[in-house]
Every structure is written in structure tokens, then in C-alpha cells.
Image 1 (cartoon, rainbow, N blue to C red):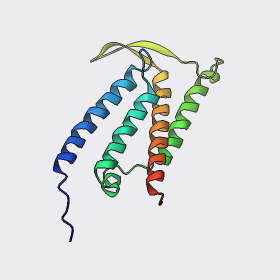
Image 2 (image 1 turned 45 degrees about the vertical axis):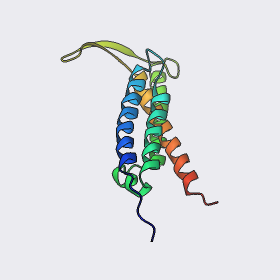
Image 3 (image 1 turned 135 degrees about the horizontal axis):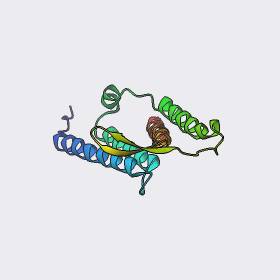
Image 4 (image 1 turned 180 degrees about the horizontal axis):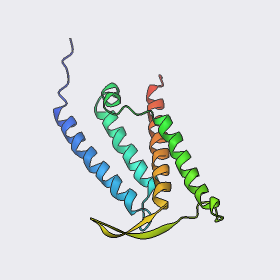
Length: 143
């Protein structure tokens, strides 16, 4: 009988790295409409963190802890992006025309709110859903 591998170091380092990757992906996402970043690269970084978890732990364990249907997530992301893009057309503007304004929020003070963030949420969902679906589909193929 083959002994069970001791993956304590691998699992511990993976958990720490995943937290760092997810934090960085949030930073990339929020920087998107003023600096390089946004929904695409934030979603891709999030997908990379999820793939790291899949590689370190077994697939069943990750799917139990992250019970997400990534195909539905991708479809929802495309729907959000298209709906946000069409929002401008309702008011007679161009497709993907954004609206923004400055609001005085109690804790944050004067804050810019823009519809581009909603579009980026849709893009991020579409990228995460598509990337994870592709990776898990490839991993299920037998040689």
C-alpha cells in the first residue's frame, strides 16, 4: 500500500498565495476605469487563483467549498455587460456610453460612481466563468 502524501506545506502556501492573488485581483478590478486594469485582467487573475486551488487540492473539495456553476456565471457576465452597454441607448446615446457622477457618501466623502464599473463586473464574471469552464473541461479529458 502506497503511503498518503503529506501536503501540509503545499496547502498552507497555496492558501496564503490564493489570498494574495484574490486581493491583487480586486485591486486590479477597482483600478480599471482610471488606470490599467479592469474587469478582464481582474477576472483573469481571479481565475488563476481558483486554478491554483484546483491544482493544490482535489477538485471535489474545491467544488464543495465554491459551489459555482461557471457556465451560468459566464452567461450572466455577458448579459450584464450587454445590458450595461444598451443602457446608454435607452437615453439616446451610443452603445457603451457611460454615465458617472460625484456623490457625497457618509464614510467615503466625495466619491465618483460610474456605470463603467457595472460593465467591468459583467466582463469579470464572463472571464472567470469562461476560463474556469475551459480549464475544468480540459482536465476532464482522458488521453
